[in-house]
Amino acid sequence: MSFSQPMVTIRSARASAAVALAQVLDAQRSLTDVLATTMRLVAPRDRALTQELCYGVLRHGFLLDQVLRSLMQRPLAEQDPRLRSLLLCGLYQLAYLKTPPHAAVSETVAAAAELGFPWAKGFVNGVLRSFQRDPETLMKRAAQDDPAADLGHPAWWVAALQTTYPAHWRLATATGNTRPPLVLRVNRRRITPTLYLAELLKVGIAAFLHAVAPDAVVLEEPRTVEDIPGFREGLVSVQDAAAQLAAPLLDPLPGNRILDACAAPGGKTGHLLESLPLGCTVWALDRENSRQRKIEENLLRLGLNAHTLTGDATVSAEWWDGHLFDRILLDAPCSASGIVRRHPDIKWLRRATDLPRLAEYQKGLLHALWPLLAPGGVLLYTTCSVFPTENECVLQTFLADNPDAQEKTIAATWGNTCTLGRQIVPGQEDMDGFYYARITKSPQ
Ligand SMILES: C[S@@+](CC[C@H](N)C(=O)[O-])C[C@H]1O[C@@H](n2cnc3c(N)ncnc32)[C@H](O)[C@@H]1O
Image: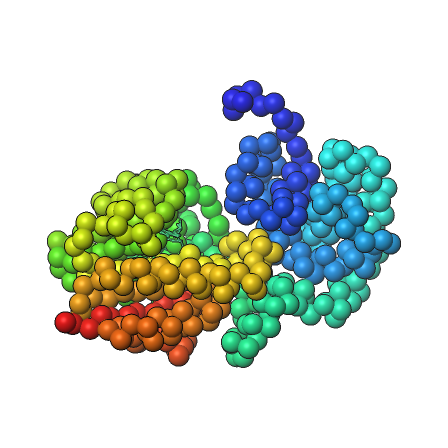
């Protein structure tokens, strides 16, 4: 099928969002993947609303689902998943958006017919009108009936945050439900953050320097990358401030060989290269070929060079040349539980049982990469997870198994000290949740 001759109907924003959300909520697919195909079927003028509905429902859907249950005569499980998603879109508009209520109801009802449920028009209308009659009481009652839903996260997740962060769990859950800031990383090879900020202010773009990430500039309003001055020319990249704190912790010396072992799409590879001392070389490895190409695209835009390669970090025989690395960055695949404000589908897709499985995988990566590090070298382990199972517990096992490995404390003004490593709780200095641990290898 060619792009210019679509064989499928272009749908309204509400119908499109309902179809997309059903694929996340029912078929357990990632929102990023789903939106990539959905947006091709949405008229350009409807794309912003489609996206708003998808993100909004996933951010607030646990509570809206509870409201919906209270409005139903019989369990919604008997209905088509797209109908449930459409009702959630309707409730989201009424509860959180400034859409005029009559338009929210009538357009959502029309979307039911568009999706092939003309029989459900009266039903959708009835549910939304019932909500409209007393939204405050219904929302309040739903919050009382299900406190975890009120916090916008699954119950197991809230319980884990409460145990781990007695002082910060409210910040973590509240942050998970917000719209994230747009944070840029300034390419210091090209311009300083202060000068770049001055350029933004000159063209009327409100922005400020981040409090703890020295290369970060935060924009007050979101905008597309095409509208960010200097983005195409490689002056800046989009990267949360927490992610920007990782690369400097490697602190390479002139002439070092550096491995970025899980590098795609190349955010931290780019940052490393932007501030590298003379004579260093960087290998950027990733298992996924399609993601590997993203590294190349990003480095090309930034005008930087790395030795990029596709391969499995746990099978070094397939890609390693046998020369030891002085620095290794292991930005491990994880639950991504620290970045749910950017990817709210994660709250719906993760299960508590995923954590031990992910931890085993992370331990496998550490175990496989350790022999590639030179004596006296540094390995930086990072995740965007908030769960200790994937963070200090992984490191604890690793240090116990490897007597030549020692933690090198990260002294910093940001985040919290853990038994091992350092953790940013989502929302601290308005950053994503992130974990960092620095391990050195004994000199021989
Ligand atoms: C958290 S992301 C990395 C983000 C990246 N460091 C950045 O800053 O842009 C984790 C990456 O690990 C890759 N990955 C997972 N298992 C791997 C393996 N066994 N070997 C190499 N890469 C792997 C995934 O494809 C994914 O791109």
